[in-house]
Structures are given as structure tokens and as C-alpha cells.
Length: 581
Image 1 (cartoon, one colour):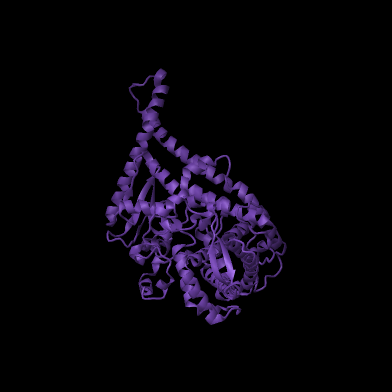
Image 2 (cartoon, rainbow, N blue to C red):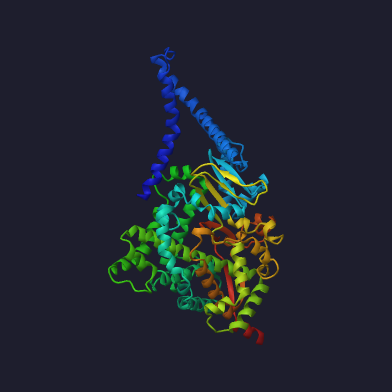
């Protein structure tokens, strides 16, 4: 079913483009009362008229639509967001610039550049005659996600892009189905469950063992890959009741060496499926549906993902009919509540991806930040050792008391939010409040896509100060934190409102636990990026973080480091030996 829907969509769109003008001409041909166009010549003349009428019809259609939209806005006493226009018909040049910036540029920069050029924080872009709104206004985003929630959803076009990957899971659905998924998942993220650190401890010890061996051999590790494995194994047991994913037991990738194993194939398929979704965003709805009309680009990666997930689902289904204990895992509870196997699979993949990616990437960028700021690492390690010592396994209450650790994690999430760019689609015409002195902006119709850049407003200097691009955990502890208290919506790494990330506290707890255990064991992180993981030389002269970054940040739904984050870790034991020498 999913594989056919986007094909039906593009056929419908093409029919609309070519048939509406044809219908008007058909009516006109009936009015040719005096027989000006003879029967013999009518076919060719009407064909020529049609070709001329096609662009005229759509120019008139767009012009009338904009007039009606402006009139609606004036009646409400508000304005439309300023229009960013290119030089080519349909703003094709703007489409190309956006696609190139999203693919090859620093994440979020292309939107900042366009908004800076227009001198605004919110603007409209008419891309191939379809209006979109892009914003980095945090008050607008807050309104869209919270008070204006009934007016916005994921939308039909977003579902088309994602459904052959994520199906009708919690991240792609709206309305009653979304409420069902949300209700099913919420109990499994309550405080009692996410504060049970036995599973965290089990897999963190596996990480430490592997890192200890690599440290003793003076070898480099891609921590993004390592934390991805940790998050997958943890989520597999914590959410789905399986303790034998065992991806941490598989060989790890090495510098300048390609290898294949079952986990690596699964991880690569996940990455490819996510990148396919982002490519569809970059090139636009009409372009990707035409290019993939005969072959869905998700078919190949999904065959690999299915080969991984199906055995786990089959095992769980085999237990269906048995009583579900109070401490049952999420999957068992889901299976007891629905007979729809596809729905079970969709929700499994949605939650698994969220649990894996959010934690893995936050740990990755936290490790990167500690590499780049050894003074922060030294202070954090000192704080951990003073409160817990070198061996104590932290509890929930222990982690609550580590204020500097929370400040470090918040600063990582500010600079590297898990989902750097997000979208919503309007479900009805509405007015969106902003922080702009010119007032709110009008969203003219249902189906209007709103693109909001979280990574942009969490780095805005007018909100965070001149040092907004700097990694400084102190901003969460000194007098600057008061500014945060007066305007909390400028920091929303997990979203807000009814769709706020259910796993927010789960991620905080897991990241905190792992960082504590790592810093109890290791006292030095050293970045060792291979050439393929470094950003292009042209970035070095850029302003802000782009000019100083030592990796290529990319987004394939969630933020990640293209090529990985490679580093060496030194254990505290090694440090003591070196001091004695």
C-alpha cells in the first residue's frame, strides 16, 4: 500500500497541472459559436493554444491565489511572512541553492544565509510555485508546537516521504493513530522505568571493556559507531525485552579499513533509509516522486532492516496469548493491544530509531566537546570523583546532584540538538505569534509546510550572547541562567507541547550514566580524525562554529557526524604509569 501512494500522488499532481487548463479550453471551444476555428484546422490550433495557455493559466491561478491570501491577512490585521524570491521561473535557482546547501553545507547554514539576506527570522519561499515558510523564531516554533498544536501536524506530504521507512508509526502519524501510539508508549518512559539503571550498567561495562582494550593498544575508535551499538543493545533490552542483539560483541570499524558484518549492514541500512528521506526533502516532493516512480529508493535498505527486525517480532508474536506481566516490555504490551502486525513493526522501528539515535548522537557530541575542551573535561571528572569516587555505580539521586554534568549535557544539546531541522504542516489557516516587532504572520491555507531550524535559534547571538557559538557549560550555572528562566523556549532540543519527545528524560539519564562511568575510568579524550571525516578546507575561513568544527555535521532526520568521530581514550591507570615514568 505504502509503495503505491506516492505514485498515485504524482499522477494526481500531473493530472491537475495539465487537465485544469485543458478543461478551461474545452469550455472555450464550446463557445466558438461563429466557427472561427475550422474543423480541419481545429486540432492543431487548439494544441498550440493549449501550449500557450498552460503557463498563462497557472500564472493567473497563482496571482489570484496570492491576492486572496493577502486579502485574508489584511482582514485579520496581520501580515504574510516576507517573500524570498529567486531570479528564475518557479525560483528554480533557489531550489538548487537550497538542495546544495542542505547536502554540502554546514547544517542549518543555508536557512541562516537566506534569512540574513532578507533581514528577518521568518520568511516565505515559493519553490516550484509551492509556498513554504522557514523560521528561526523560537516564539513562532513554541506556538506551532504548543498553543497552536491543533493547527499543525506532520501532514500528508511528510508521511509520503517517510512511510516506506517508518510506516504509520508515532513520528509520521497524526490524529487518532498518533494518539494511540503515544498512549501506548508513554507508560514505558515513566520515572520508575527510566530510573532502573541495571540495563544501562550492563552495557556500559561492555563499552568500558572495549575502550580499555583499545586504550591499552593505543588504537583509535569511532565513538559514534560505538555509542550507536550501545544504544541499540540497550534499547533492544529496555524497550523490547531482547538481550541478544549483541552488537557490542561484533568487530569495530578501524581507520582506513572497510569491513562488513550483520550489525554494520543494519546500521548502514538505517543511515541510508534516513538519508533517502532527507534527499526527498532536498529535491522536493514532485521531483522525488517522479525520480522514484518505478523504484522506491527505500526498498533495498528496508530489506536489510526487515531481516534484522522480523525475527524479533516473530519471537514476540510467538508469545502472543500469554498473560502480560506488569513488568512486561514495550513490545509485549503493544502485541497484547493490537493484532495489526504492520502497526507493531512500524512502532517498533520508530521507537528503536529514536532510542538509538538520540542517546548515541548526544554521547558522540559530548565526547567530541570534551575532546575540544580539556578544561571542561578535567572539571567534570573532578566533580564526578569528588562525589562518587572512581568505582561507585551512580544512582538516579547521584546523577541529580551532579549539576555541572547536567550543564555539560545541556550545552551539548544546545549546540548539537538531536533533530536540528524539523517541519510541520498547517492543517488550517491560522496566525502564528512571533518575537518579531512587526507582529505575527499569517499561514494562509492547509498544507503549507513550516520549516523550523532548531540549531539556528539555539545559536542566535541575540538570544544567547556574543559567545553563542562557543561551548560553555557555565552559561547554565552563572547569572546567564536567569535569562534562560525568563525565555525557556529558546532551548527546545526535544521539542515541546503534546509531541514533546517521550524519551527526553530517558536520554538525559542514559547519557549522564554513561558519561559518569567513562570519566571515572578515563581521564583523557584525544581527537584523531581521518581525512575523510574532516570538513572541507573551505570551511576553515568561515565564521562561527563552521570555521572551527573538526567534523562534518549532517542531518538524516537526526544529527550525525559524517565519517564519524574518531578518538583515542587514555585510562586513568595509564596516566598514573606515565607519571611514574
